[in-house]
Image (cartoon, rainbow, N blue to C red; front, side, top):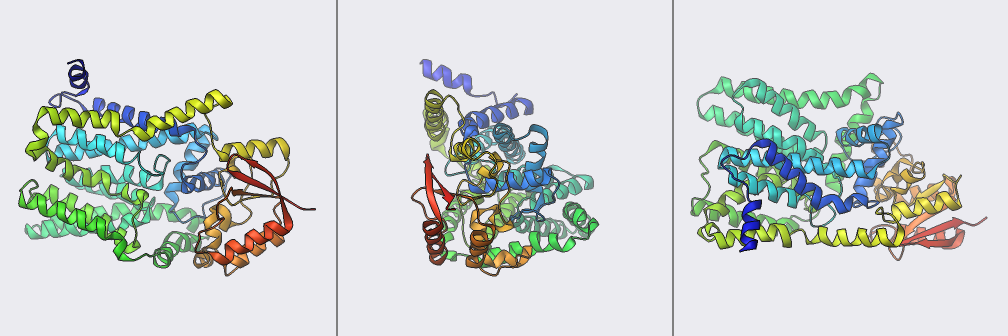
Length: 497
């Protein structure tokens, strides 16, 4: 009985719940789920790279001019803004990441409400928070999180706005999403084509042309805005090579078999056929069609890449979950209170198990070490500052957020993200004079000669497919370095005199 009362007290009154309260609940959920991960050194290597790129911008260098990574500029601008305001603060970056998740989920709520009911919208939004915060390494702040924070309000405006200025603003927001994560350009294109087709099919050609034009202009405004700083300093080629050509090259070079996507496509195909047969979704409804087009755009981008990972799915879940939630509420099984109660218990007790375990770990770390902050990316810089306080010539082949901790820079542009050292297909796009990964490694080790090299204990330095590169660095460390110490799961090598 007490459990029932507790659950009912946690269940909002959907008829009167307002936007402010919904956002507050979503932010609370996102913060509680993600809070224990605020104190890790790094959660995903990409997040560490974004931080380094953001710091470089704060130091006065446009992206791709001092350091280099394969993302559009808005991603780095976001991190640069946080660092500029709050300094070197993991806590600030991760809390604003929770804010991004809540904002994305809030527009999942708005879209669910626009298509069905507030109840559908609310639970779809809560699921969106969980799906952007749990499972794998997505507790960090990823480019996909930022991308969807722009994309979802843009999609909502396309659903709800009847005014041309709303379509222009939608284009601006989705343009920001594109300049955060380039693969969502496929989704943006699909949406524009659909809008034109929809109004054309209604024999409103002029309205369709105006809507699609303003939407497209909004996107182009943002693309142009990211290009202008480079054009103004006569470096437009750097933007074009890094933002566009390198991304296309990477997608082609790293493409996997389409068979890797088969399970996801099959499951979603079964879901949509089921929803159509049972008439749980009205596929004649323009709003449902628009959401479906957005889902198909995301899936098409996955197909072009030939792979799906937990990061990519951040671009799918906040959209797809609305359609899933609508179907769930129409299944008789889920309408019964006892099953609804179980659903709520699942959300509160079972689903956040990963977060509960992390709460336990950080409390234990606090008791043992006196701080919640943990990980080699924090411990290694502390060791270096204590034992090699003036040494900046360091190569991090693992835990490269360590550059941030010791106020240093990667030795070459390719080393901004350690795996880029061996992505020789990208070298021409930032004018790297070396042609192969082996040449880049040779230059770093024999010309720059890092005094300290940091690697992950008992781990290959590079992908297991890169046998020659792994063999080279292992042999070089054996011949010219000595293992000075091990800090947690990091090996610190010192160059022999």
